[in-house]
Each structure stands twice: as structure tokens, then as C-alpha cells.
Length: 369
Length: 199
Image (cartoon, rainbow over all chains, first blue to last red):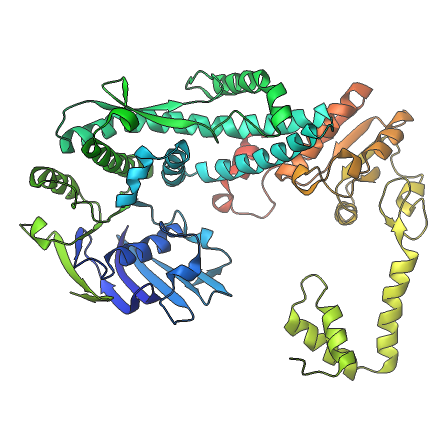
């Protein structure tokens, strides 16, 4: 599946843009502040149903305008897919192949998309929630059952937390608590299982990409860390058993504090150099940058493996921090049949623009072929 | 800005409070009522008032009724040993339409949802337990909605009814009749595989 054509109206600094893309590598080049990232944002808004920069749709609107509209035409062999989203901020219209849907959620998962931006350094440097967000966004695209389990888990979790809050105020109904605890364990164990499975699979890929791009030739591995002294055993029944024990150990404290202390909503993905040193603490700035990118490229492989087709890959300003040697390595990785849209300030970074490439110049919200 | 004379805008405002009625529909209904004969409007108004004043919930089962106990509770020809527990009166109607179930009902008036502050004490659970204590009922069928809250409610009830030595069952989940297998969502399909039957 690749994006063949996109139509943009009144989105960020674009007034009107109709762009044809190549099935391979598309290079968006231009000076800073011309709209390269905005273009990637438009593409990802269509395929993920949300922006990677903001949760508020009004920020996506071109200044002084009342509504924006995006339309993407995707091709997969003979099949075509049409995604549309438009809003005047009061009303949102989402269409998939012309059929109207109520929510932006309907866009998600139809064209799987992996996106890297310079902000992704936060996945390495930020708190555990950044790494959970990373896992959740891509696991929902890699495994078709993940999104439902994820939503069900959070619903059960909020129900249980509301009940625990009442416990804190002295209310007691242990049967009711047990029911919601079981629901949390049931759905939460599935999330943990998916995540353990995914981390085990992507870890060698992360290492490979990191080795290729990093100067220090240290090993990098991902390790999924469960809260509450749970042993991470890759079997759904064992996870349930472990989760049950862990939640039992913290029961008194949970009732005192009024919320659930153990579970996938508090877990973390640890990244270790040479099996030992936490990348967050001991990694150099360069290592942390290449690791963030390696995490994203590994997800491309995971999605390719589970879904049978490569996702759309969006790379925002990925070259700015790399030296020539590493740029070359990265370029070599990119030509493997995955449609990629990559933004850069320097067209020079792409020395041999062959038939696999398409260059698009971006200047003040206008795109030139 | 109010474009209508006061009685008209008041009518529109009241109508638009109804579920599923937006401002446009409310406006259309208001004009329709205005253009109808006085008799028609009175009939509608009195039907509404009558329904409101003469209907209540059955003291026994919680179903909508004019007299308590309701017709279903009084009907001695029904199976007195089987009790079907549902969330809303609407669900009783749906089950009655099947003509498949001939037992008695109990309406909970909701489902457990701590998020909305709905606990066991907000449902008619204590009344249900009173009914079960008479010893007449042999089987309780839990027919809560198949969503998370309905499921939790069913599990909760099963937990407290089972020790009373009463058989507790719940509705099967599976394929809708007349559906296409390929269009059925994965969760329903996997539940259907789980609950498969020998033929």
C-alpha cells in the first residue's frame, strides 16, 4: 500500500497543495519553516487519525481559515483506498472510500504508518510513558487485536480506580472489587503478553540498526520491565498468575492510595547497552539519537512481518544530526521497498537521485515537483 | 437571537431536550404541532401526561407497568422457577418478542459502573436477593448487555447467587442469524468458537 496522491486544503501553512508521490523514496527539501514537517503531519493525520504534534485540531488550521480538508489516495496492486478528513472545527467529516464515519478513529490502521521526528529523542530520554506510547502506537498497527485489548484494559482500569477511590473513603464491597480486579488482570495480561512478544522480536532489529548507524559499536537491547515484581514469562496464563499475585501484594496500599499500582499502565521498556548499561543514563547523545531511530525502523520490520506489507515511513529531519558516513548507512537501509517520505534541508544528502527517488521542493507552503 | 414568538421558542426548546431530537427536528415538530388541529395536540399531550402518571415500575420485578405487580409477575401460567435478569425494561420487551422465554423477569435498572458512581446498592440487587430467598426459583438467567459493564454485573451476580444453590446461566454469545461469517468481528467470532456446539 502506498500513497499515490494527496490533496491538502488550509492545513497549517498550506493553502492548496495537490501532490503526486513516488512508491519508493520521496525527498522533501527546503529551508526551515517552509512546511516540510507540516506535510508529514498531514500525511500522518490521514493514516493515524491524529497529529504527532498536537491533540487540538484547531492548531492544524491555516491562520484566518475556518476549516481544513485532507484527502489521500492509496494504491495496493489493483486495490485503491481513499481516505478523507475535513473539519470546520464544529463538525468533523471522515470518509473511507466515500463512506462516512463518525470519528477519526475510523482512519487508524488502514494504512500503517511509522513516523520519526527529532522529538522522538524523548522516547529515550523521557519518562516511561513515552516508551509505553511508542509501544502502544505501533503494536496497535502490528497486531490487529491490540487496539481493542488496549481500550478494554483502560476502561476496566478506570472502573477499578473509581472503585478504589471509594474504598479510600471507607466504602467496602470486596466482591465488586474482585470483579473489576479480574477484568483488569484479564485485559492487562494480554497487553503485557503482546508487549513481551513484540519486544523480544524487535530487540535484535533494534540492535542491528543501532550497530549500523552508531559509531560506538556497543550492543543495544530492549527489555520489557513489569511493575510489581512480576516475572516476565511469555505465556498468557503465567502472566495472569503473576499479575494476580502482584496485585494481591499491593492490595492494602492500593486501597489506601485509591488507584491501581500494578499493570501495563506503569510498565517500562528499558534499553540496555552491552546488556547492562541503561542507555538513558549512560548513552552518549549520538547513541541516544540513533537508538530512537533504530526503535522506529525496527517497528517497520515488525509491521512488515505481522501484516505482510511494509508500512508508510515518514522521516522528519532525520539527517541533521548525522555525519556523512551514517547518512550513507541510513540511505542504504531505506531503499528496501518501503514507501518513505523524508524531509531535509540539504538535497546534497541524496547524491545519486535515481529512478527510486522523487524530489519535491517545499517553499512557503507550496510544493514544486 | 430569538426569531420566534415566546410560546414557539419554548416549545422548540422543550422538544429539543428529547433524545435524538436536534434543533432542526425540534423546529419541524413544533411547526407540525402548531399546524395540527387542537384535538390532535390535546390527544398527544394527554397521552404523554397519562403515560407519565399511570406508569410505574413493578414492585416485584422492576418492569414498567400500570399496576403493581405487573402482568408478567401475576401470570401464573409462566414458569415460576426460572428468572431472567436484565438491565432495562426495554430488554424485557425484546425478550418477550422472541416468545422463547416463559419464565419471570427481574430488571436491574442499570449495570455496575464505578466510573458513573453506580454500585450494587444503586441497582435492584437487594430486591433480587429477596426474591431468590423464597426458594422457588431454580435457575437465574443473566441477560446483561455483552459490554464490559454488563459482563461485570453478570459476574458480580453470579458470585453472590451461586452460594444460594441456584443454577446460574447467562446468554450464549455468538454469530448473528443471517450474518456473513467474513464480516463478523474477531471478538464475537472467537467467542463463537469457544461456545461451539456439537451437532
